[in-house]
Length: 114
Length: 111
Image (cartoon, rainbow over all chains, first blue to last red):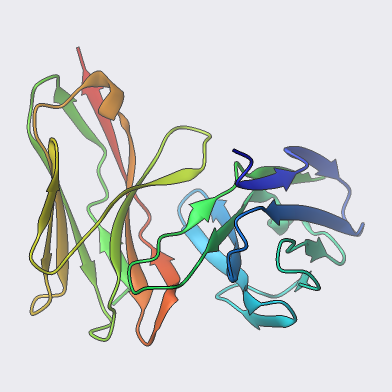
């Protein structure tokens, strides 16, 4: 079952370049999220979306842009990549239908900014 | 006080041991609680939800103490395959879909 997929799995880019990380889910979940995971910080929320065309900032949104024109897609764009954005990025989705709706994660994108 | 705090670990235990993880959260309005596990270089996966009355799933028992804002996970009869990082996860008060993760506790089960 496809579930939630991220692409690319690995990406190396240079400082100052724009890069887009893709996320696609097949469950029709309302909620989608982008987290970054760094040693010493754990998982931190970058942006989230409650539905198509509704997005909101998380804990660490600076330097990132998101869009959600379709329910199933939630791309994350680094407008001008910096070395501090080297990280593992996880996309997740949830149906948010009950108070115990868990997150389902994609398998991550490892981004290196040189 | 950080939103979600866990034992820093790491924990190294022999096979068959019982191990307990503790977690505290700061937002008394939080309504949803979970334990996730994360294997090395993989995505986090739901281990179990935590209910007010406590709940058990095989060798795993989760407890919630709302008064103390404390969550625990007990693993009995540890297996080698239990080796992973365990993440305590709590909803941000007022929004059940927005979750905050603890930094995780690394468990290594040794033969």
